[in-house]
Amino acid sequence: MLESMAWIPQNFTLPDSMLRLVISTFLLILAVIILRTLTARFIRRNVSSSELRGRLLVNSRNAFLLIAVLGLVMIWGDQIRALALSIVAIAVAFVVATKELILCVSGAILKGGAGSFNIGDRIQVKDFRGDVIDQSLLATTILEVGPGKTSHQRTGRMIVIPNALFVSEPVINESFTDHWDFHVFTVPFKREDDWHAAQKALLEAANRHCAPYLESVRKYMNKVGVSRGLEVPSVDPRVIIQAPVASEIHLTVRLPAKSGQRSYIEQAILSEVFATTNFSAKKTKPADDKPAEDAAEDDMP
Image (cartoon, rainbow, N blue to C red; front, side, top):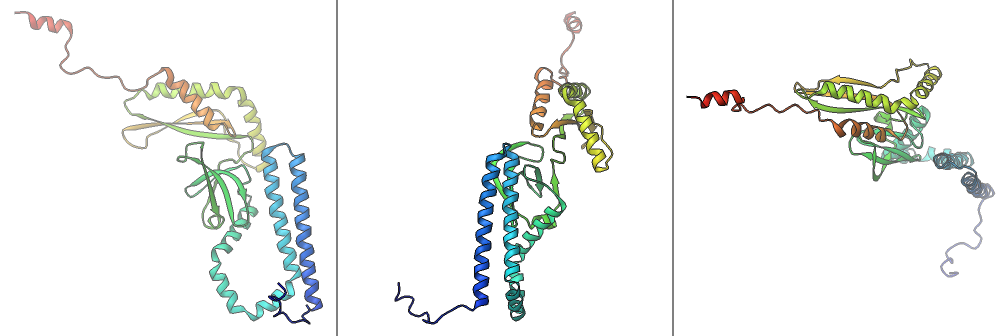
């Protein structure tokens, strides 16, 4: 070991200014690690809600990381400026080479400043849809929900979305409110089916399932409307008729539902409506079928 270090000059010493910077950097990193460990331990011991605990752990981790970065910039600021002046060309090449990483950091700043979503929200970016479980400076992690845009079942897959997408793509947040959401689903019928009866049955089932909490939803939506300066929408269940093609009728059901129970109430309504009633068109009799009287007359001479 000593032989391998023989190339180091015996009188090698760091300048006092550089030594102070190294010591300051070491102390900063040590302080951040200790504070982050103590904060995480405090959150795990004192926060009982798993969702709130996960959100606080992620936010505290990102906050301490930002503090460490800012501290390093402040400590090494003079050296960084002197170095930047001498390697402008290299810096330009570096920016071009790390364009995606810069876009990821920009996307993190954008979604954080705009308050696009939080841990636990259900979002959709392009074809990626799921529940947010983690977010950092470079990427956002979601648990996929699907298949399709109308399903509310988790597929068991984890998707890591680079934050660069948030710069160029719109974000759909399906958890706009904290407690109650509006859930919409569509039931297709053929034009000759008895969709009038299906519309009535769907509306009755929706009213019956929403009745226990409809007044609570109305009060909550009034509160949200006042705080955000929005016109309060009607919370009563409704069934809207749509005709996307000439041969079909689609019944779109909109109703209030508790966050996390949209799929449950949809399945409950559909099971109740279609369990005992068949809304398909009645079969017509074959053309060669004849009444008994006509058959008797045919047998007469």
